[in-house]
Length: 135
Image 1: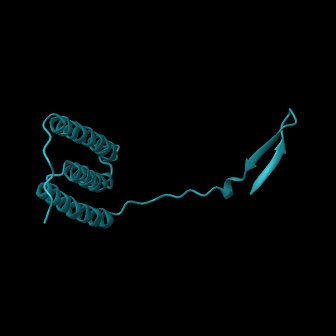
Image 2: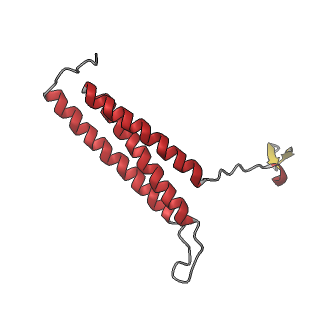
Image 3: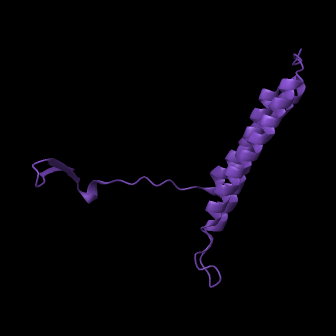
């Protein structure tokens, strides 16, 4: 419910009742992550094979990108399993930080893959070779 009130300078102020605010929280489920990992791995393998057969750097780079997605999903799955552990005397915060570490590893993986692709692109720029058609 939207409520309009007037402040001391005769300007309208919009207020919301707290009971009207809706929070949409999405829960990560391990089963969904495993299905996503398997499907992305299948796509990655298909693109690597296609890239090697045709000699296409674009397909190989896309496969590497998909592989980084697979790694990200694997790290997320592991972090999800770890973060669900209860706090203990030694780990008073539990394993909630595992999700932050997984996010850091995921970002680092993307940066490393980007450098590998840049290296391959520069190498092909100076030593180009034609892409073989599949017949």
